[in-house]
Amino acid sequence: MPARGIPTGTQIVPSLLAADFVRLGREIRAVEDAGAEILHLDVMDGHFVPNITFGPPLVRSVRGATRLFLDTHLMIRDPLALMEPFARAGADLLTLHVEALGGGAASGPSAEGLEVFRRARELASDELGCLLGLSFRPVTDPLPWLRELGASCDLALIMTVEPGFGGQAFRAELLPRIAEVRRLIDERGWTCRVEVDGGVNADTAGSCARAGADLLVAGTAVFDRPDRTAAMRELETAAGVAPRPGR
Image (tube, rainbow, N blue to C red; front, side):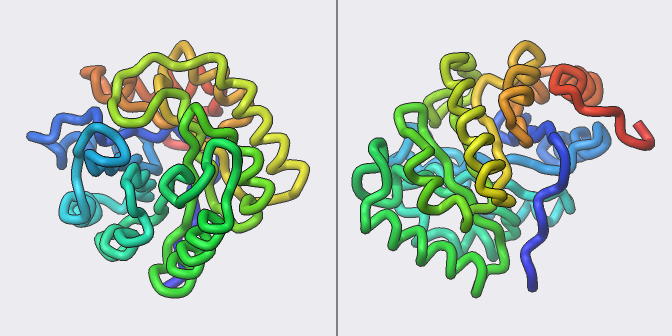
């Protein structure tokens, strides 16, 4: 089965990590009703980052509750070994951290890292039918990686906080990085989308969108608000998203 494409246009992407897991089904329906087209799933293994969240069984439950595009961010030590269980559970996009691919991530890709990505790309395309992205911690320069691999990536995820915990403050000094990645992708004519995750709220969403981000991941800015629809509209307005039909 061919992979589902990422929904087009600038998107506010609610992060399930900030939801109330006691009432998860209702939380998902609330952001669906608010117009979300993508749901962000933060997978943490307690090794790559100092926190543990959830695994394939919860992704399978989410998939059973919604048809939203499942943007699955693998903050795990050995992503290649776990791509298949998450894809089989219903993930539409698997985003791997370059720092978990092996060797010299901060300064650029090593031969080992390039080979791991090649295997991941083949697995995603040929066997799993899902999209594949790359994520970059604040310490890692994404440009050397993307110059090598951007043509084969469906998503470049720029972390604007250190991954591992929700609710952190946005690091504004990383805005030029978003713009650099956007410029590289546009110059090369790649279809790779640009996502930003970390501290996105009504005060920062506009800056991210103007820098060139397509997908803005928002956790507490959506799920900590009692009115999810109002929260989504506020973020869309800040990001310059035109009102969509039916809203």
